[in-house]
Amino acid sequence: MRNSTLLALSLGLTLPLSVTAEMLNYSCSYTEASYTAPFHTAPSIRQCPEGKCTYQVMIDGMSGSVNGVSGFSVSTTDQDLTLKRTAKDPVMGGMDTTVLTINKSDMTFESRKTTTPSVTLTTQGQCQ
Image 1 (cartoon, rainbow, N blue to C red):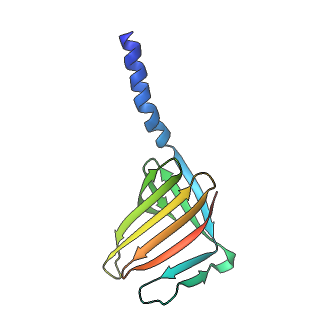
Image 2 (image 1 turned 90 degrees about the vertical axis):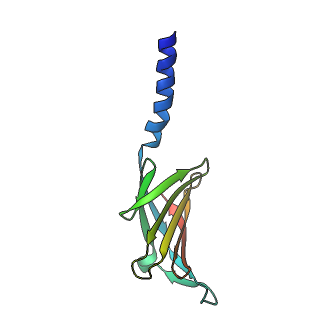
């Protein structure tokens, strides 16, 4: 009885780890990007060339990449899957933060990248 209990417990602890370690790939498309900044009086909208732009999102366990850029941490809730990355901006010298959130139920996404000096790029669209 004791050995079967230990086996069940060890399987129960390793199973969730193997499930979260699954490799996931998404192609997330959007048609425009919105830029805001303290020095803008209104958001600037940029249309994507050829009608749409795409993020290639790869998730491997608790880390991920977007368009081949690695270093994203991954968190998940019942509703959302979120990738986040903060990195030094080599041009402006500050820190850039990118957060891409995918809604699990309808596969819509929103991405926000904030750079120095408080410029925010926002995109929204659909993932497959």
